[in-house]
Length: 176
Image (tube, rainbow, N blue to C red; front, side, top):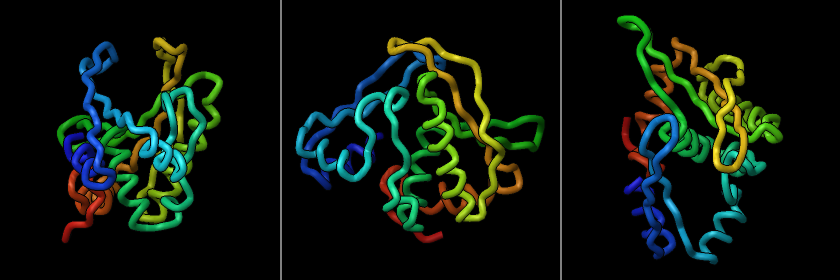
């Protein structure tokens, strides 16, 4: 998050704010806020969702989906924010991507997840089908989790192509 704050400051010459939040299923988490109307308008114009992701219709902008370098950078940040890694048994690694959407926007959430799956497939990274998990009650209403897993055989490729080739949060290519 500090790297993203640095990128925003270098790009737009504005300071963002990192806010600590508590009370979700994982304990403490953080949000990054940019309170600058011109910058927020630019971000919205290029496809950044406005407001709560759980209550907003959005998808990955085509200028990201259709450009290999942009899609890798987007997937890198998306997996760092919404991905999870764990080990089952001694050697079986699992990688999951999960978001939450309000009940009335489940279809939009599934469409978004399918867009990510297509982006991964363009980089030869296979995934499971999308599935729903139990609901979660939040301040803004009831949400459901939407998930998919990266196929175990493709986790090394995910690591090399998505995680291993970018500086943390900056989207700048490094030599691999």
